[in-house]
Image (cartoon, rainbow over all chains, first blue to last red; front, side, top):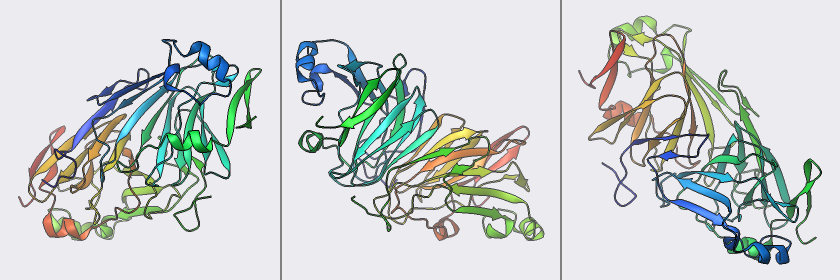
Length: 191
Length: 191
């Protein structure tokens, strides 16, 4: 058996329920509440008022494939519907310290994939069956654009890519997604 | 813009139709007939008789993401139902010259993922919504186990992994999937 993770992985099946985000066999589960999203929303005063909230903004259910070189882990992210002073619920966003491509596959609900390479931003509308391609070098954040439904997607990414969350605090994401009537608009990040 | 492929890729959406295997935007399409599968089926005499057949054994529709380092390409493979002297229709199978993990996600029909690391083999049953995890170092081949339906899956793999088809001709795949009544069985590769 040729192994790269420790202990070496054998071939195995992973099943998931797109309606519940349950991944089987299960790996790590990450739960993000307001307190975990410091410095990310535009309205810092509103964030301060809600930072003690127990409400889950998003969760990430990973498969057991580890984030180690040569492996290809996957995870399912669920973003709750909601907003903070009009800014739509979103993931922290991150850059890959080791620049490598990633894909997101929409599972349920409607969302968007906001990307930023430090100079320009891009937005991809996401719905079930859509693949969003994240080229190496583009920081990425997901946003739930629905007012009432969770937005859920499957991510597949090289195990050596890593997650640099500080990059987004230092550079922003180029734009923010803000509720506009029944829809939303992208506004400048600093605006 | 930070680019790694030439020309650099920008973020973009890829949609696919699980019922037809149409990928939009489309990349390369590969079509394999009997003549492309020399040396792979157990019954070489039967293969010789059918080597001129126009029947498509399987096809691979790729997205436009190129197979270059740091990118994460995807493709949809469709294997026709069928068999040659009882051996179920299958892909050529390959090893990654640069050992890296890969995932297959079942889309339609029922199939199997046969893996071999040079010493032992493994088999994963595949159906819609199942992810088969291919650890680095395991050669992999897909098989359609249905007698009447195509088996179709989405593959996601690192762009630098590569495809070594000769490895399978040199080492085999550890086992063969052979029709047994309404089901199938795995038999020794050399048997």
